[in-house]
Image 1 (cartoon, rainbow, N blue to C red):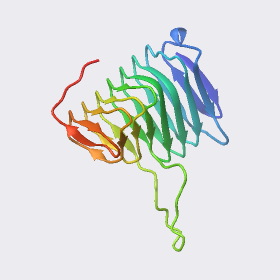
Image 2 (cartoon, one colour; image 1 turned 135 degrees about the horizontal axis):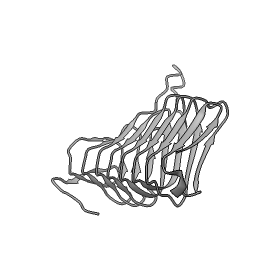
Image 3 (tube, rainbow, N blue to C red; image 1 turned 90 degrees about the horizontal axis):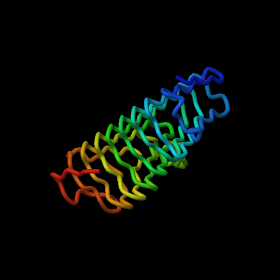
Length: 195
């Protein structure tokens, strides 16, 4: 196991002897008490993890192949990626809201997952925050197509397929559905997919 520490921040990597040198983790500002954990047989052609906050947990499961960026902003925010996932040049932005991705998922190049709009919008008179962050949950064995966007508050059930360039903005609880369009809607149900 490889372990790096900085201001109580930790990066734990199983099987460090086979780890690509392209896993880069940065802890910014006053970040403290954060843990990045990477499981057995992790493979990457470049993964950049950026954390600004405290109490952050990033967990990548076993037998995962992942490249792209994972950006985490805020305190006690979690990003979880299940076992046997495969992602190519995917962006995950967990900004004051957590992101959970199940096991056996396939994410195509350019997929973008966000738990926030990043910039805040307030009511001018009351000062009320109009667009708060909301967690994102992606089930097991979900296939997300090229350049698809999964927005804050989205929930995708097990076995679903998200079409190329779709914009998912809601909760889809029916397993085995095909989601497509802007905004995404169910265009077919009762499907299974293979790698």
